[in-house]
Length: 114
Length: 114
Image 1 (cartoon, each protein chain N blue to C red):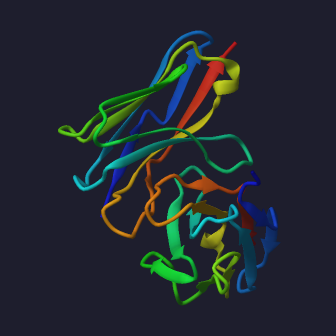
Image 2 (cartoon, rainbow over the protein chains, first blue to last red):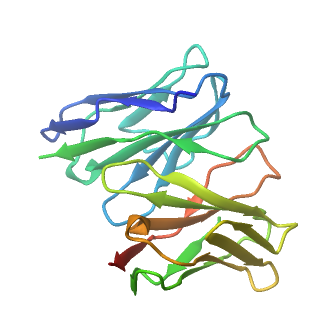
């Protein structure tokens, strides 16, 4: 079974530029999460989707971050404009449905903002 | 919201010794407690989980215990091996609502000395 795929794996940008990350969850998984992991800390939720609807985006800085999951499968996370403090690893995770708790994580995208 | 505290932040053991990592949580509604292992440059990998209706769970050299009254849970690794060296995260969430986002601890860096 293929795991959660993410791209790119690494990205370096200057502050005030924009960047986008892509995630392809495990086939058949209805629930998709984006987490931000700052160096030395545990992951923190940015947004949770159930199919193509948003379940929880209370921690998403909506003035600069946006995310979509238009067809209920792939998802993109965008930052515009980026700030220095956005430097982190962005992790995508998926779970089978809104009942099963087990979350499977992708390898992450390491973002460096200069 | 939920708050998860994890101790110690670093742990060094000799190969063959046991390692114990402890976590406390604040939300009495939390009922699912997974543990993840994260190796350098990779996403978190689920190693074991426990639900609130169970006090202990074991999988080969790994065991987790849960004390709901005290709101703490622990990871026990016996007969440690060099390949156990990684950062370990505990997490908690409640299955009672649609919001299944995990709240993570700050991580424990385990180093197993050969």
